[in-house]
Image 1: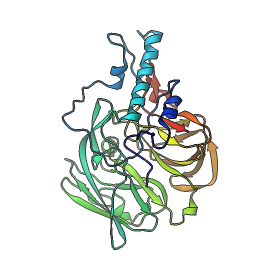
Image 2: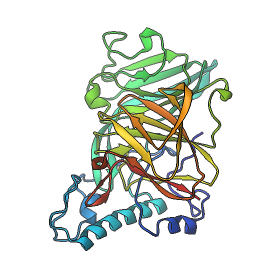
Image 3: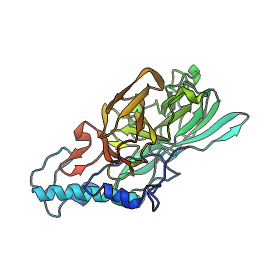
Length: 366
């Protein structure tokens, strides 16, 4: 099961809240949405014209920079205040979510004669990326990323996909060695799933590891607007992968709502949390259109798999470059206490004169 919650309890998921707040005394911002308990999309009546974090943080009546990084018209104090206000929003979000909807929640299933059976509905929904920034998304089950499908190597799955869109769609099981008829390529391996229709995919998961599922019909629009999710296949032999205490997702997209991690942009989502000495597995997946080098401050990645396949020789680094379609798996040993920035190192995807935004998260070690 995932180690995720929609909102931090009083002890911030087991980490003393006073210690947590103390870590941020110097001013650090970041957001990483990790899948959580079931959540619904932002209600349609909410206006997308509401103030964005940028607008909320800007000094009243003053010129403000955009995410391109310009600072014309801003004094030193004004710029610093904008940075602080966005960090304050992040801290508020730790106490109480500041956006509606949580993506990448585990998808429930039922067992039928030894087969795991899942249900996916393709539908449009309004999705709040940052406070007040509401985007029209194309989703699986109303959330972005879609629900996380967890299965076991060699244990058959059956996935019913209902199309409630006004256009056709399909599902490709990215990284899986499925029968050709189940690969999700309209007019090559199957007819498209037309509006109102349901198509059933059946296959035996393999190889194990971190994989994805997404549309392969009008994919430039459908995938980048939200038709994407994680497909996690556990190995039959648990010894085939390194041991870990927590399992975390880091899914990148760079179209719907701008630069996001697991469907949200800074400052809308909670941090990754660990106690000193814990081993945390990160599954990096790029479902966008750009390459993103993900950098972790103060700690080390022990990279052990690429595209779900164990590496013949794991390696250490602090930056993992994740290209579209790639998956990388790494263990981080939480051996250096503090609050550590965790972000895309193409800086125009993460920080501007207004402060942190987009593909920024934080890894907190107590």
